[in-house]
Length: 100
Image (cartoon, rainbow, N blue to C red; front, top):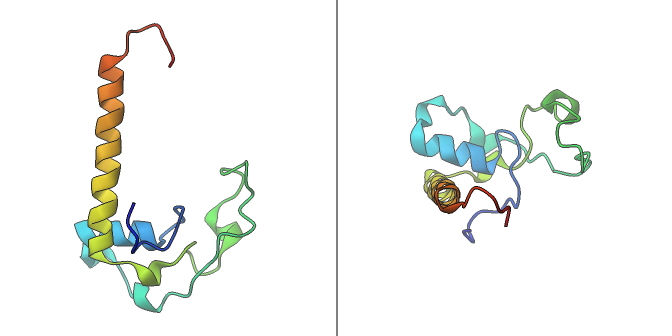
């Protein structure tokens, strides 16, 4: 995606989400630069909805919000938008029968 993005997965109020909000509504972001990293270990792999954020972190975030930038947010929003557009194009081309 982008070599400047450290996280390989999305957390909560993490580098990815904080970067995107910095890009679209920076006035909503608090003092993220001082946020301590919260790792992804013990993530109940295989059951991503088997926990809530309060079970995993006292700080309220999972990931590395201190690494966020508006520039990273622009990259993430662009990549996600391109992926959504690609999905819509696949739906348009679908023959209504096959699942391939």
